[in-house]
Length: 128
Image (cartoon, rainbow, N blue to C red; front, side):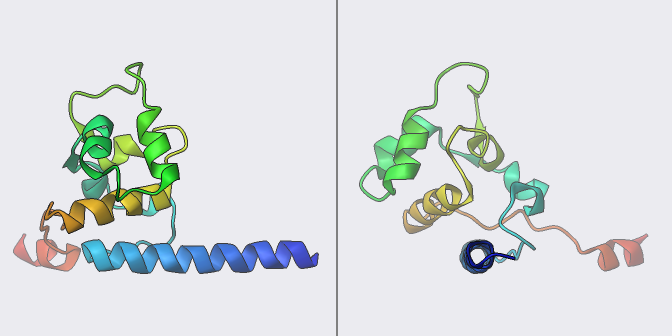
């Protein structure tokens, strides 16, 4: 392995750890990695304001990359009547750290980030 490959892997590991800890602090959920596939489906389906509303409301709190990704949303096939965390992640240029940026702004404004309570698999089995 080259030194650059090692550095990239180390940086990716640090970024993943940073994402997981920040996501956990905001939601109480701890994904295994900083990829959409590792986020709970019930979280991804939660409703949030549209990209236009997010920019209008939190423009000064959002990082430039997040703001730009939200502003570039066009009313094409990704246009949604109701927006979710999952639909935001479909926007071009909108990644996991943009998601954290939006979540932090929503959290600071009092928007509920906690996932809908659900029973654990052990509980649901014992209730059957």
